[in-house]
Length: 430
Image (cartoon, rainbow, N blue to C red; front, side, top):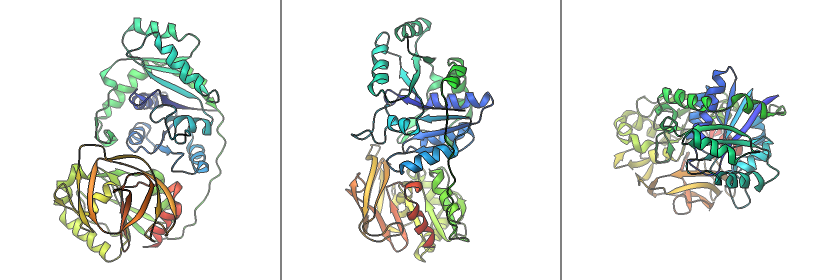
């Protein structure tokens, strides 16, 4: 049997990510293969998992992905120890619970470990934990990890209040457990000092009963049958922007392109020349932080714009959208679409998107409905034809998807396991 569990929280900010990467690292140090997963659409936490586990973290999103794809991804990638970091609070999702950590826990049929910020609690911790444990009896509630414990005496008070509840860990209040943040969330894996992961892991391991956690979360994970995709575009080369400015990609988005027969050619819009490719994919990230460097690489900008104007397909998401405009933060960008973008320092949109395509475009046919998500601190002023009408979400005043010939740019992020036809059309356009 394998071990699998969800690291859930009572609410956002209780330390789920630090606890998760601490456990991932600690189990690896004990010789186990560890597969991380992330509930929901978040790229940043998943990048930290990937750094810690040495293998790609997989997003499991019950809104953007069909439920069979969620189950298939979990079962296909499961290994000896499987750690799923939750999102927000355990029951936070849409009004019917769709997209919540609890919804996924029941779908996967794996136990829940609840992380509690105990820094300002004593006896009241029992009411809090019992409420979460008993709210939905169909959940497999396994126990808790107390975070932010102030002292040995504080730990004893908490444990005394929680008699009858399994306490897997009591993690002390420690600045080591803090990961620096900015707009969009925690810093990405490539910006983190690797010693921080080591320090977090030591604190978590020293204050967690790792043996009990492993034994109490043993589960049977059914085998997933491999589903092959037809290789229909052999010879198509896709230039994928990958650097500090463009770093938000679901692993499956790239894997699906490869499964269909594409060859991926990574390049940095900050420092490289343009690779020889038939199509181009600009993911999300932080182009607003690197606007000067992107502007300075004028030769790549000119070459990429020329290739797209010659009908090379280009798909751009969120940060990629900003790069396709004339200016970002007042600096020259690709100029494929007439418009400008700026970073506002204030959240403009976060959440799921449901949209209908109002015209045929690079990815979708007129009338097709699809799902994705958005998360941005920027605004754009743009002139052009919008090809998405949002049923749910913000986009650009209820619209999204700027399209011209074989170029498409949008705030909406897509997950390939929910939009395989769209990614195939992107390749076929090349």
